[in-house]
Amino acid sequence: MSNTYNVNRKYSQALYKRAKEVMTGGVSRNTIYRRPHPFYVASAKGSYVTDIDANTRVDFANNMASLIHGHAHPAIIEAVYEQMQRGTAYTLGSEVEVAFGELLVERNHNFEKIRFVNSGTEAVMSMIKAARAYTGRPKIAKAEGAYHGTYDFAEISQIVKPNNWGDIDKPNSVPVTAGTPENVKSDVIVFPYNDTERTLKLLEANKKDLACVLLDPVSHRIGMFPIEEDYLIAIYNWTRKHKVLLVFDEVVTYRVTYSGAQHLYPVKPDMTALGKIIGGGFPVGAIAGDAKYMSVFDPTRKIIKQPHSGTFSANPITMTAGKVAMELFDRKAVDDINNITEIAKKQIGEAIKEADVPVIITGAGSMFRMHLRHKAPRNYRETYQCPEERKLIVDFLDYLFLHEDIIMINTFACMLATTITQVEVDRLTQSLLKGFKKFKAEIHRFAK
Ligand SMILES: Cc1ncc(COP(=O)(O)O)c(C=O)c1O
Image (cartoon, rainbow, N blue to C red; front, side, top):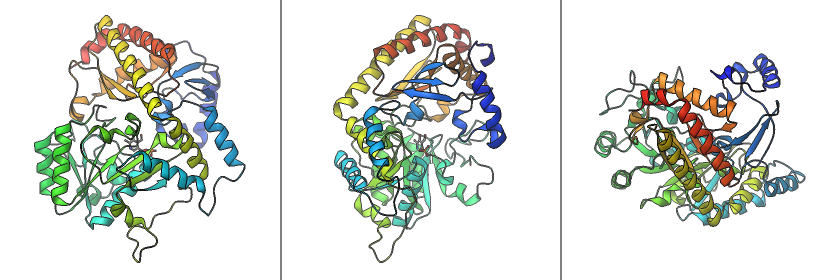
C-alpha cells in the first residue's frame, strides 16, 4: 500500500486538503490524482521533478508525453519570454503561427494545410466534424478501447469491460460519460483493432453513413503496439473504394518518426490530428491534411461548411514554444531518442529475464508500455486488465513513485524526452528489476 512507504508528504498532504475544498476530488485533471493524495511540484528541469516536500524524481511520463525536451528547456523558455513581452494573444494573426504552420507542413508531405487548436481533444473533434462536413454523412468508425480525447463521439467504447463489450463480431458502442445521448452511440461504429475480417464487415454494413474511419497507428490505450500493416492497408483500400475518409489520431504518435507514425506505413491519411509535443510544453492541437478536406474551414468560401475559431487557437506563446521544440526535434534528435529508448527496452528485457517474470514490452519510437503477459497482445480485449490486475499495476507504480522516485504513465508506460541519458535509463532498469522481484508472485498470477 502507498502509505507504507516512508516518503516526505507533509506539504502535499496539506495542499490537497485545500484543493479538496475548491476542486471536485481535489483535482482539475483526474490523471494527477493518486491515493491517498496527489503530489505537488515545486520545480522541474530536464528529466527531474522536485515536489514541495523536496522529493526529486526521474520523469518518464513528461506530462503525458507532451514534453519532448523534458522540463524548462532553456531555448524554449528564452523564446517564450521574448514573445511574452510583445503580447500573449491578439485578435489578429501573428507571423510565428504562419512560420510554425510552414514548418509542420514542410515536415510531412501528407499535410497540405494545417489549422491550430488548443488540445488533442479539440483536434480530434474538429477533424471528425470536418469529415462529416465534407462527406455530409453522420457516422464515424473507431477501434474498441482506443483513446482519442473526450469528445462524445471519440469517447465511445474507450473503456469497456467483459460485461459490456458485447460480441466481438459486433462490439457494443459503450459511452464513457453518463447521460451520453443515444444517437452518439448509434453514430459510432466500434470495430476490433487488428481484425481485418470483422472490421471490414462492420464498415461494409455502414458504408452509406460513414464519414470517416478514425485510427491511431500505435494506440497507447489498446496496448501500444503498432497497427498491423496488412490490416491498415485493407482499411485504407476499403475507404478509397467507398469515399470514406481515413483520419489518423497522431496526438501521441507524432514523435515516433520525424513526420509521425504514419510514415511507417504505405498509406496516406486524409487528415491527421496532432497535439502534445508540437506545443513545446504549452496547450496545443492541430488538424492537418489534404487541402480539399481542410477547405471546410475556409472563411473565403461562399459557404463555410465548418466555421472554426477558438479564442486561444494559434496563440503566439504556444506557436513560439512549439516552433522551437519542433526545430530542436530534428532528424538526429528523433534518431537519438529512439535509440536510447531501444537501449532502455533491451535493458528492461534483460531485467525481466533476470527476475524471471512474464512481462512483455510493446511500443514504437520513444514510447513503450509493459504488459503482465506471456505473449504480446494484439487488441484491446487481450490487453484488458481485470480489477485485480489493475490493482497490482497501481501498487507497482506506487512502489516506483514512492520508493524508487520514478514517474511513469499509469498504463505502465514510458514516454521519453530528449533529456533522458544512459544514467536515467540505468536507474529505471534497476528500479524495475527490484519491482519485478518484489511483485514476482503476483505478476505470475495474472500473466496470461
Ligand atoms: C491518442 C490521443 N488522442 C487525443 C488525446 C487528447 O489530447 P488532450 O489531452 O490534449 O486533449 C490524447 C491524450 O492523451 C491521446 O492520447
